[in-house]
Image (tube, rainbow, N blue to C red; front, side, top):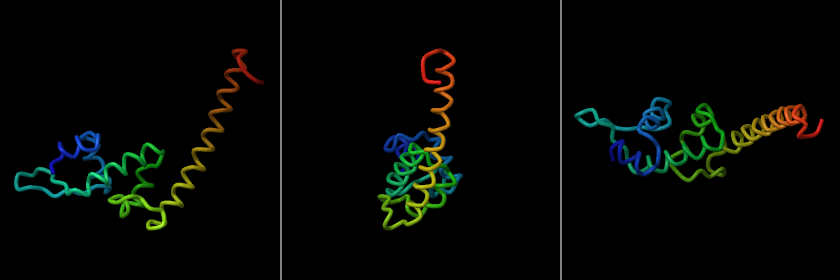
Length: 115
């Protein structure tokens, strides 16, 4: 399938698909005219990439689990995923705590909260 069809089937923009390719997360073949062509596995792969980005993972995180992106991501099969999920979750918990503190201090200055 060409990039337009992959974009339609996954909801990812063409620009995003080219970016995923630049980052080594997605592969295409080139036609004689230089157009990108993707196999059917690319749909699952792009959906996984988008879901994992939406979960807070980074490109660097995804590059570590790149071999697993073309299938249903099964932590039993792809052992690195559990480690990456835990590390990312820890970072998010820290960020949430920090942001909650900022919110509470600002709310207190407005007379709307504790402190």
